Length: 160
Image 1 (cartoon, rainbow, N blue to C red):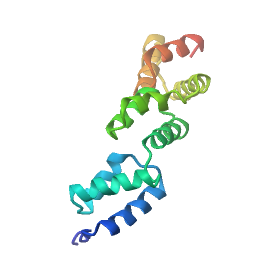
Image 2: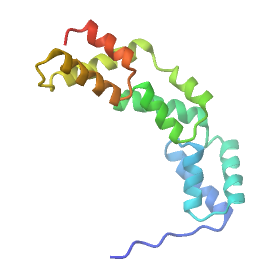
Image 3: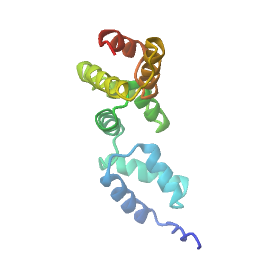
Image 4: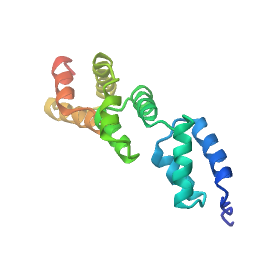
């Protein structure tokens, strides 16, 4: 079976219309939109013009994207700050905006999410040795993007 042909866009107006729909559907980073425009076959000058028009029309806003990304990954996927920060870096969001967006996470909510995550995982870990069990729980929290110190604090405070 053949792969469907990709339609190439050469007209900047059509590219802008499609990009507006693409950005209206959900928040996007500038890099995501830029990649999509290149995928559609537009040239560099047209891509940069479209990006600037999207920013002027408020279809594209990096700060709004960063805040939505942080909110979504923390609330829906229970990711920690480290993993969220890495995700934003991959999307070429500026370090200043990353820092600002991460500050929107409430510390008490963050600690509650970490505690829930560790308690849920503790129910599935069958290790009997306390040190190994705590290490596994700590590693799990780290793999989800939570800071090692915070996970150690939660493990120390909740006798798991």
